[in-house]
Length: 85
Image (cartoon, rainbow, N blue to C red; front, top):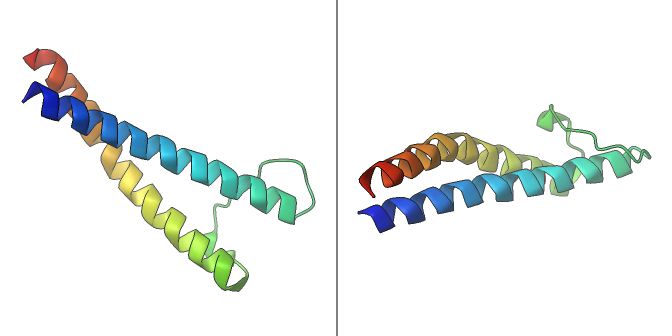
């Protein structure tokens, strides 16, 4: 059980890191699109232009929702893993 909880916590934390990485890449791309060297966070994905941007916005929205759900699960499984070991 300890091994399963440890693997679950690592997968959840890895998913959050992957989401943050892709979110940062998207923010850098939006900043480049606007001609700035700044990283601009896209807080309004409905303002996406074109099919590619809209697809990226939908994907990041889905990934963000999963990351919000995965973070507490990852923390809880890490704490349970430490308690059980």
